[in-house]
Image 1 (spheres, one colour):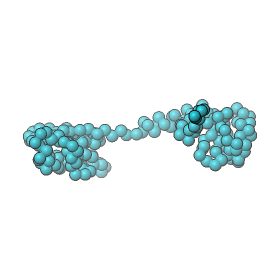
Image 2 (cartoon, rainbow, N blue to C red):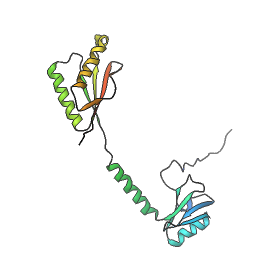
Image 3 (tube, helix red, strand yellow):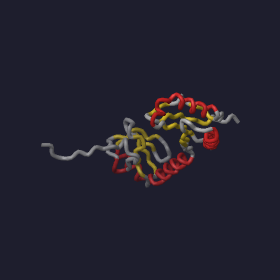
Image 4 (cartoon, helix red, strand yellow):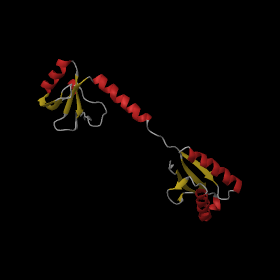
Length: 183
């Protein structure tokens, strides 16, 4: 019978850094509050150095041998990290994939309406998935569906088709990507 529980530390996986008493290594490479290299010291010496300046000892590189610890204000450090993450998130551009559904026997005016709507999506910088859903006996005419999708892509000069029409189950689709502007 197996008795007892094991706790597996996931220091490398967690986002939180080890600080002060949480650091269990015997020796660490110490960086002072001013950024000066203090060399490899025991954990007691490193803790004393942090206490003398009234700051925290933070393990900033746990995977290094020996681990790198820095004397800094942990609250301020976390605030700066969160600020950087928010800034990075703000600068990310989210590309949405819009979908335009066509039918195998689409009429000219309906086709032109779908082309105009798709052109608006592409002008806004979105990717567009154009798809045809085959119903019943239409599956026998998948080549006609491919022709409709190719014609649809050709009528949109501001888009490029990344690959030929793909048949997945009863749906054939293409992905249209807006061409970059040459300003």
